[in-house]
Every structure is written in C-alpha cells, then in structure tokens.
Image 1 (cartoon, rainbow, N blue to C red):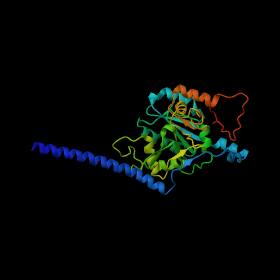
Image 2: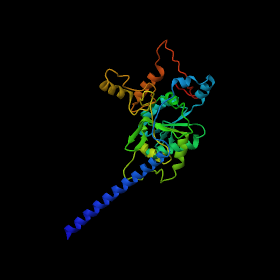
Image 3: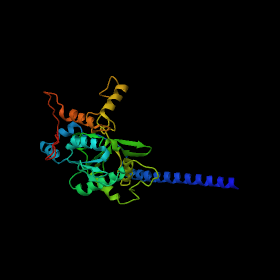
Image 4: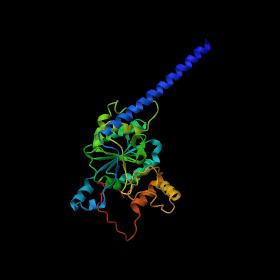
Length: 322
C-alpha cells in the first residue's frame, strides 16, 4: 500500500512538473507567435545601411546646416552603484556627444546625478527609463539611444546612420540577434528607437497582456528580449544595422577582442576582417579602455591631413564635448 502511494505521489509530481513546463512553453510560444503575426502584416526583418556619400553631397549647404543643428539624439544609460567607475568613464567620454544624456540608476548615488528608478531589475529599469524619456522628451527628440555602462558609442556615426531614416516610422535597430523565429536587438550593442516606436511602446507599458513587467514566465528572460516581445506586439520588428560592406555597426564586443579574433582568423587581413569604418558602438570596455577609445576616435589627428566630411554634426549648446 505504502509503495503504491509513493508511486502515485511520484506520478503526480511528474505530472505537475510536465504540466508546468508545457504551460511555460505555451506561454512563450504565445508571446513570440503574437510578434510574428504582427510582423507578417508589416515587413520582414531586413538589414539597414547608412546613406551613401553621393546622397549627402546632393543636400544643399543650408539643408546640411539645418540637419547638423536639428538632428537630436537622447541617450539613456542604465547603471547600478557597482558600476560607479564605468559610470564615471561614460560620463567623462562619449556621452558628452549626445544632445542630452541621462543616467538611470537602481538607487540614489551621491557622487553622480541620476534618475532613481527604484529597482535593480534590468527590465523594470529599462521600462521606467523609456517611460520617463517619452513623457518628458517626446516633443524634443526623435531618436532614443539606450546603452549599458560598458558600451562606448560614437554618436556622430549614429547620426550619420540615421540621417535618411524617417523617425515617424517604427524603427527598432542595433545588433539584431535571431533566436529561432524570434529576433531582438541586443542591449550589449545599444538599442535605438525612433519616436514612433517609443509612442507604440509607451502605449503598451500599461497593458500587462501585451507588455508584462515580468514576462509571464517562470524563468528569467533578458531585458532586451522582453523589450522585443513588447515591440513585436506593437508591430515593431528588430532590424540589423550594418555598413555598405555588410559589417555590423553596432558591436557587442570590444575593438581589442575584434582585432584579436581577426589576427587569429584573418592574419593577412586584420583591418578588413575586424570592424566597420563607420562603427557606432563597441561593448565590454573597462574605464581605461573608454578613455583610450576617446583618444583614438576624437583626439588623435594626423598633422596635415584634412577631413572633408560632407556633413558636420555640431555639438549641443553648452556641451564640453571634445
């Protein structure tokens, strides 16, 4: 009798476990399925590229000046107190080139100014940062760039990439990753949303069925995947950003790691096998590497060599950028 009861209990527990797994699997398919259904009614994932130089040269001088003054990017950096050295490096380097950059912290940190989102859950931090940015700046900025404190961004290259993109269209771009039939933009390379995508996301943040705070899963899902699920439900799909040669411009690794890989895999073509000339981001940097990147990108100049870029993006008023 005892053995029979143990056997039945064991069967019951197995059934509960299998049932739970099936429910989770069904829930996940439901989330992804909804996103895929929306995609079919809009457009398939495609690879986005920057405008070519010939197109830029066709723009009149007055239009170029207007573009350089009015093309504005708002930067969101998600930080935690343990990131204080990275936080300092990001504040002292590339964020000076954003038209406005704000740090969103999991709690108050006395040494740096930040917006306290009162949670250390990265998905909730991201949601609250996006809501704050939309509520406060939807009439001032058309492009919103979100990054981690380990990311280095070249904002002028981002602006150049976005130059011919219409922010009234639902853009959601960066380093796109495909997982089965599901695609999302990796937060490690930085995430760019147009104002239209921000509007659609903001409209869903208060609808748990379409954009849940915890994803409706037993196990944890990364914040960038949860963002993609919400955006999919708003008819917004992930798009990969690359240059004219097909190289990614939003990178999830550091320059040093790319060079090391290129030396191992393409020893005779290290530069060609490494990175795009118009890269927007690199990730996985230490504070010292941030400053080295700043030196290489903005300060080092070859004497006697004149750069003749077709368009110059002027720094924000009052900024101390390099």
